[in-house]
Image 1 (cartoon, chains in turn cyan, blue):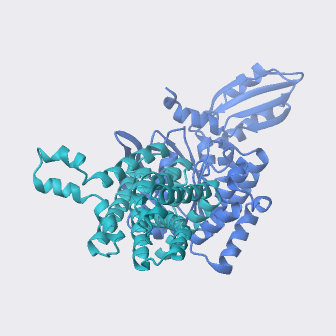
Image 2: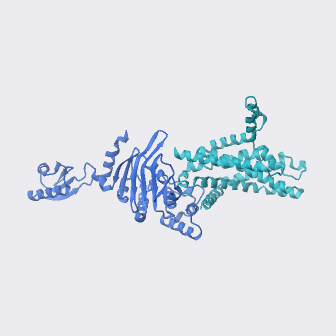
Image 3: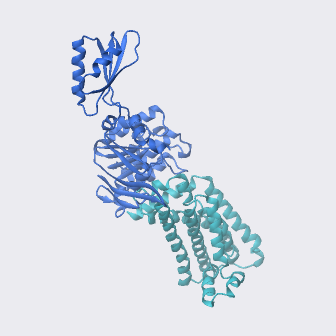
Length: 246
Length: 316
């Protein structure tokens, strides 16, 4: 029953996405940008390497803007249209609704990611890449997108305004990228104990993403991404229930 | 079927619903009326489980809305205020989602969707995008999702809001036809709708329940309830009024407007008197005096007068 509820919600969401021009515009822009960054900025051909590292290395930065844009409508639309009142008076639990909407958006991003397959075909044609590393790269990228998306969903539950949701989620995701970066840790290093500085650095997405890109499936990295997603979804639930309780 | 017990709801420091209790059984159509901001929609949202009550209990079909929300919600169909709909979908697509969420699949699901479309007269717009629907169709689409699973309980928040007179009629007839083995709660600002459709009326004012009874009982509360307007062809109004004032049980009697040969006298029975008795006595007097009585109208009392009297302090 629970799973069929989630499936119904996923179906509805995807149906809504593809019935609006926004989805197609998003996919085209995503593919255009990844292509541009890979071939132009990474000097793909000059590098003469049969790998997609020049493709994947941009994803944390591309996702920084694209994923909040994809996720900013998730809950703010429900509140704006009033359909939240429909959804939460139907026989679904809050968790099923949150998981359903997140899964649909994540699948949509996954589809956009899958549509970059011409790049894989390019590198396969031109050389002899390590396909294991490429698969790892896609999985890591998918997890990264999911993490940003969960955060974007959380911020969209806070506000009715998509713009505010977008800005806040970009800031949070930016923090996650920069957490281990010297200019950020320098702010803490002078007064905080070493453990705190280390803890804040550990929040950063970059080391975990880089690990997976190397073709290593470390449980710790999977746990990191899973934790970000689970924590954000859980917080989304709290925010939504709080709104209802007044 | 629905039991609301001592429900309170605070929004911050504002008390929106104060100690509201009532029960509704199968076959009843309960009308919620009250000034804007009185707490009608909030009460409905608490019953449907959208908002939790701050205090008190609500149970639907024996299931507590807080402890067993999914079971309770599966028994209910809800039409929220403003008839919200998901964007970027056709009417059919939207009802498809509603049916799936209610647990229908395959052929059974198709049947339910077709049933809802025909009941709510949505056939002309079944493949139209919800974004382009007129207000009437939007309402009916949202109503369709509330009845698609043939729920035992229907909660309708202003179901005829903004509809044209014909559409209002359609919806009211639909509601009446469905009421036989369901519980229906509807809220409205249209008092005539209450009379036409509802078997019971609940007035909510500033969060409190101030009346619970039938619309006839409500009308009887009017100052004018039971008043008689007598029309005579010929005679002196003042004289007739004078004589009738003496009848046992009459509180007041006054001459009304007279036009041509028609003379009108208005007689108000006292609150404690048996109105049937008073009418009989008046008729006796009229007969004995030989007055030409052409018409006798019993004033039933007007709902809007009673409503105003009960809620007017809120206008401040």
